[in-house]
Image 1: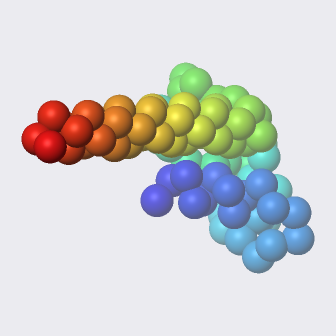
Image 2: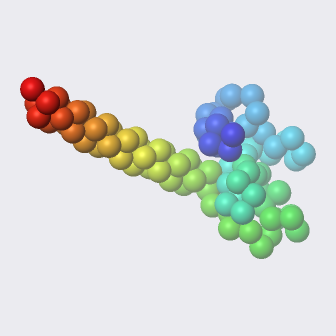
Length: 92
């Protein structure tokens, strides 16, 4: 998906870091399209009015979203295990 594309685009020296159309580095992320762009793409008519940010910034946001989701899942799991423990105690 897009997250994997962003991650790939941020790894220097990995094939696929160049724009297929312009052979420029993919350094920008278009929030509207969810796609990595080079500077030429970002200035094109297709993306000119879109919300474009540095790719590193977008990757950091995705990383934070993923980490906060993992934290929430961990807390849900702990609550679930706790409720099972107290349920087992009650049934004794």
